[in-house]
Length: 452
Image 1 (tube, rainbow, N blue to C red):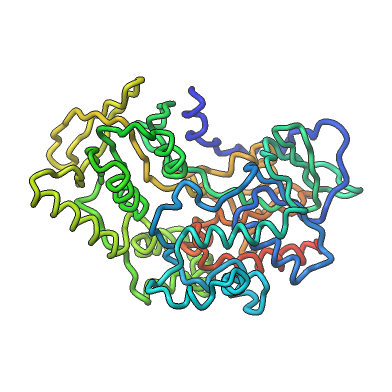
Image 2: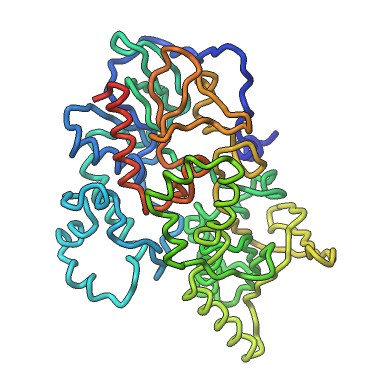
């Protein structure tokens, strides 16, 4: 199995054998109350909540990136957050917080100017700067460039806790652990077996295309029918105006996002509670309804822009951007000069041989679960996963407060922050919509566990 295959295969579902922890080698360092892995918006929001509401609770975090940038691979010119600016790191939990997006704009001297923008949502670039501004105020609590490689249970200051080992050999300990690493990129077949710089997931889009300059690729394939896929096609058309760009979509075409205010109530805390209490079959039905609000669909403005671009190119007799619906890439083979693709028409069975200098996978992320496009648990938990329960359907049991249900006595508290769409619904799907309220829920869960 290649490194790429291993990364995408994900962990296997644990058996019910007795829990056997991976030992924490060497002396255990003194610990904090809350140790967090990852310092993106989810754990940043939690750090703010702890500072504002539980100042006596000590916390520290490890973050793999030396200079974390929110959605650094997708900070495209003109792209927006698709999220109301007040659904930020703090406002739904504490509207008076120093760390709100509105206060960030005020401190940057851009509040009035921003309010005059003729747009519904903030620019993605500006939101990334807002998150960086908030992150910088917690640098003393974060070890940057510390990539966690292992997690173990050990005695920490006289009680059960967690020890996190990083790639540089450093070790940190805490009475409770909060995992906020973000979801694993989903790389579908047949690309999961490729290890090539000519194939990249959307999370690496901008660094990849910037490395191409000044060389312009002759042909580019974009896989997927998401908002990100459409934004990438438009960006590529501007960046490489002479390139042939083909967007391959399994559905008939590119779908308009469901922005009904009734559907958007799926991003309300009441829906999270309702979804959490539903049966697995009920969750499946709710997922099917809610999916177009966030997945495999796009906002009307980018769809109109793309359709008009293709129309004008056809009018001029020089079409270079294409959307191929009902299409599935069945085989892919990469070499030094590009990627050979075997593309099947889903309904007719016709197969065409295509070739691309670059392939961009706008294929989303894995959620937790037993299904082929999911992963049973975050890979970082492999050393301690036998301490926690799975349900009869193969789903990791996550409590309402985002803690994992232990099956072994003496298991210290472990929370998942931003990884729980399969248990808590669409509001936990990487969106900012309920970020600050989830932080408050985890804060309360820590208190119930006697932490802080």
